[in-house]
Image (cartoon, rainbow, N blue to C red; front, side, top):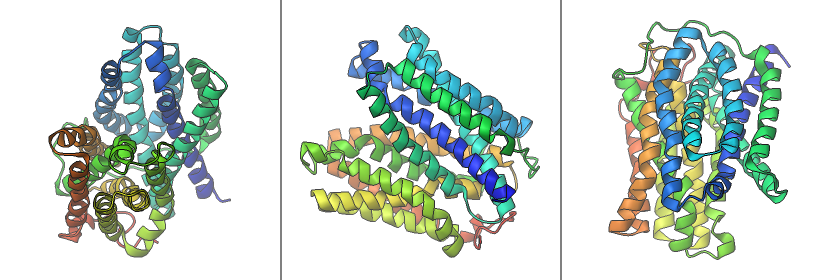
Amino acid sequence: MNYLSKRRTALGSMFFFVGLCFASWAARIPDIQAKFDLSEGELGTMLLFLPLGSLFGLPLAGWAVHQFGSRRVIMVGSFAYAMTLPLIGFSPTILFLIPVLITYGLLGNVMNISLNTQALDLEDQMGKSILASFHGLWSTAGFVGAGLGAGMIFLSFAPELHFTIVTGISIVIILTAQRFIVKDRKVSEGGGLVLKRPDALLLRIGVIAFLGMMCEGCMFDWSGVYFKKVVMADPSLIALGYVAFMGSMASGRFITDKLAARYTKVAVIQLSGALIFIGLALSVAFPNIWVATIGFLLVGFGIASIIPLSYSIAGRSKLYSPSVALALVSTISFFGFLLGPPLIGFIAELFDLKTSFALIAVNGIGITLLSSFRKQVFLIPQKIKIASAS
């Protein structure tokens, strides 16, 4: 294995560790709720503090990576992120837990921007599209983390012990990978805190990512509800739609890079939008267990490529450094993730859940159209050609 391959493996393990930590926290949310005797409404309020921290972390991450380099931010941020996880479990009161969740969300986006900046640098050095495979490892870690969480619950391990074990695993990964996390090569002078207006390229990519993240958030939060109330699945099959979506999204990210290399990133984004629309349209038009499952599979494949390819294109902005460009696009897309799930609920209250999903399906058309008009906006000068990555 040559040096670049070793670096790719090490960086992939870092994406895996971040996904493992996040999935471990998500698996124990019911235990946290029980520990503090929270109502559904109180739990929902508490869960808002993590995305609030994530939002604070976006401009900070872009600035920090630009000022200090992604390697330094990764090494400091990774240890901080891993060691914050047990604090969630050990929190004695809600007043202690809230700043911990804000910090955890902030560090999560610091890791997101710094790791993707490092991945873009490696992608340029390797001369081919590889970013989606890293996101695939993050998604795979979600399955592993959920499975590990189920095992810990079965063994009656308290959340704080569970989280401490995951932190130990994470530290081993960080120490093993650290020598392959390298200093960035200087690619742009555009930096500073991300409190500025994006250019035409980043705005368009940001809106595409916004629409994709809105779909993703809806699928995360509403898949089970849709299968229960619209598909009317047997109780044992209610999770089938979510599993189908998650499985195809994770696996789709491992083939996205090859598809992008062969057919161009723009073409893959166009296809992704079409798959999202077709998948949701099928699920709405024919809400039976088998067609809806196939529809959710298609949606997963469609969503798989949106964020990694958006990041890959945005990271080659001529006006901003990769970290700042990623933070700008992430900031725009993040609002899609936040707005999508409550929007589904609001529309469902006014009409019904099928109408909500039908309207979200229109996002797929929007993604395809936005990536179709004036393709040259995506083909700005860059280190590797977006249109013909090998």
